[in-house]
Image: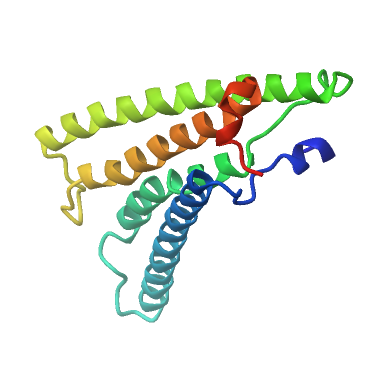
Length: 179
């Protein structure tokens, strides 16, 4: 990330909107991290018990699959807020800072659109998988609930990208910008 991009990273902002978004993003990432941590403890326990001859936790690999798919999207909003996505600025380094900001804003709004489409499709998928009643093989756990955090994470990522991208494009939206 360039030095200019590092200076524009949102670190909370003075506006109510940015403080609220930052809190939501941190809570989302915290829940994701805590969930993955608990799953890692269960897997460690399972491996130790299996090696001691007592047998592991039934369906531990299914648990890992469900937790990973559930938690992956919970980290996305914080990544979007902190502009933690890959940036290729090789061709824009020589442009003025305002032009770079507008280009970054354009791509951030593209991210917002993609996150929104992903959220929409996840909602549709959630409905289908709920109606179908799909369950895991060993744990017999319903699979649909894993979609709920994914919908939340992609939806929040879309909102974050929209609110951070608009001020970069036009001065009309500067009131949304974090200071």
